[in-house]
Image (cartoon, rainbow, N blue to C red; front, side):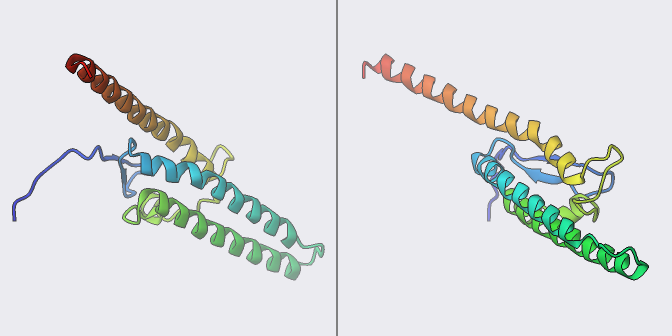
Length: 156
């Protein structure tokens, strides 16, 4: 079998030292569309997590009640992490395992700046995704102009 090597526009981004790279084509309109659709879904999961966490708060100040509330809160964060990583895998493809990309860090963990890891990740991805979408649109415009010029040259 012969191999053909073509440029697919695929790039790699490493977010964590020693973590697996996130590999995708930032100019792929399919990736961008999935990314845009998923933003609302991720916000909904975060809102649901907050509601569940608020419902867990123990009224009882006893050590036992606080321990149960803490365990339940951790379970909600674990579930939220799993659900959002599934969404992210749907955007970027299953070969991009976000447990490996983030070295097992829970997306609900808080960063040194006090923000959640998911927010830092989405903030880091935003300019990459926007730049990729812009490149895709610019290529379409360039191609349309070239086609128009070719038709004019042929007198069509």
